[in-house]
Image 1 (tube, rainbow, N blue to C red):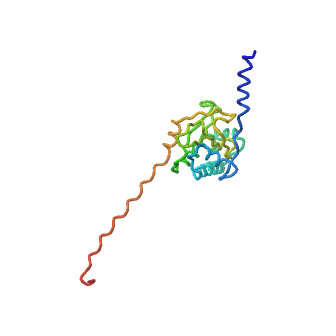
Image 2: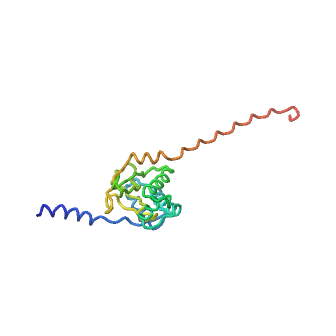
Image 3: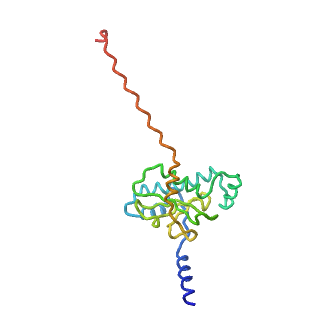
Length: 200
């Protein structure tokens, strides 16, 4: 009987220690910014602030653009019926990743995360880590769970999902970026007009 209760007890205790992700309070949420900075001593505070700002604003902008309704399950149903055009979890994650990829990051990097892969409950988010840091040390950035309101928290502490990294899908999303437009060639310099005898 002890052997039967033991694993259940430990799994329940581990689950009890986990904590729901927190709501970001603003584009410059000081708690989120601080947690990103604390990922590693190498993280640039300015980059941490930009990550928080982009993640926060992207969710709100997309919620407005797509006319997202609550709860997410209802919005998903309306999308599948053709009533709404966006608001699925992978669409929020793709939009955020593409926005983040528009900038050059020196001290942080991003990962595509998924849980309950290939099931009706699949969920996708973006994870931020310090540059070179393992995915499991990162912070999830989730705009879908509350219909465009950003929630965040440590990857390993989410009580509702077990996150796994998908590197190939990350690259697939980035391959959809519009090709950079070539810079226009500078106009050739006009040849100096030879001075005429009258000008001398």
